[in-house]
Length: 253
Image (cartoon, one colour):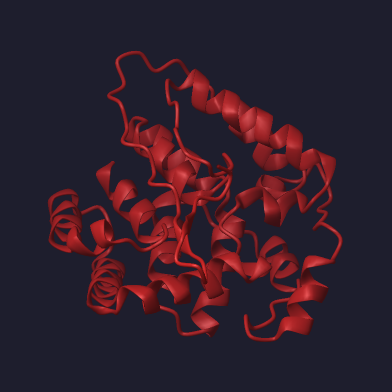
């Protein structure tokens, strides 16, 4: 499912390469044609938005949304486990899922980084990919709603993922996620308070807990399947941020 690669690229840090690939991204969406037409139109609008924007402005917008605002973090387990010890074990489990699937990412990002997760899902057979995408549907739905409130064009990516996952999000679980602090990126005091919050905890054992404390980790364990003959996947480009001194910093290096 190359469409997943397109979605992964679109929620990665904007680069010259990404903006130059706009027509190629559109072509993939047209050939596979697996997205509902209204959502596909919104995705194409996002492609145009990123390609047409000043690169520095696009990068700054990305950082303000996804790096600076905890409620919009692209790290899936951030919304499930917060900073608890359970997050570490969930990371180990997810790395094992990647290894069992023949996927060896070469990136400084943590394994629960959504673009990385989508890159892995794109290597799986379509049925398996859809199942994987459906597992964090509650987190994806909450992120879509928060971005929609901000009138962000990035909403389209999360709407597309929810549609592709074909799992109806549980309203109560989404409400719990939406109840978490969601400060604007320029409200520094509120941001500090949000990062100091306890991790989100959900009650175990219910069907609606697919993205609860235990659910996502359990489902990811179930997703372990051998995948012989998988083609190699180009690694996600490490994010480069320009400092005041003009020197690039690659997080995690």
